[in-house]
Image (cartoon, rainbow over all chains, first blue to last red; front, top):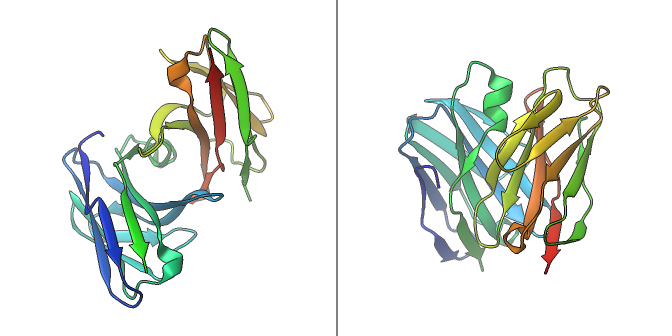
Length: 118
Length: 108
């Protein structure tokens, strides 16, 4: 999986609790992304990062926050988990290629985290 | 909006060529189109990307007509191991548009 690890791989939590998912890369890639994947919705972007401390929102960012304090780690936090956030979460990375358009498209995905909120 | 639309599913037989089309209106001239493959319980895997005419690599070809309103992923001589879900992605004006995926079922 292109030097990407996600932790935990599985998590069950209760509504209202905070949850943090970690994405770690060993590729030194500039761009990092968090997606969620749900049946019938495909992949939807939550947040992405274009550098250390530089992040932007995706289409489903409500209820999620992110942080990137160093190149290799991108954290996704659910401040107060809800049942609608039960999903499979994927982290992805992409290298800087001189064209941000090309960089954004050439993503390499981690193995995913299955989160269940009861 | 560059919403991406794909067929939900396709069937094929081993050895055939498979073409999967993604529709994407209103993309900018230099926006790339990318295709990914996903097996159950795994993350998507990058297959191919391009932004005009034709791109070919060792596993697939990508055809983009002049009007760029659609693109076609071509898989030559598919095998059973190509059974998977295929997604197109267009990133336009810093918005990420993943298609909902095409489930390809390759039969013996």
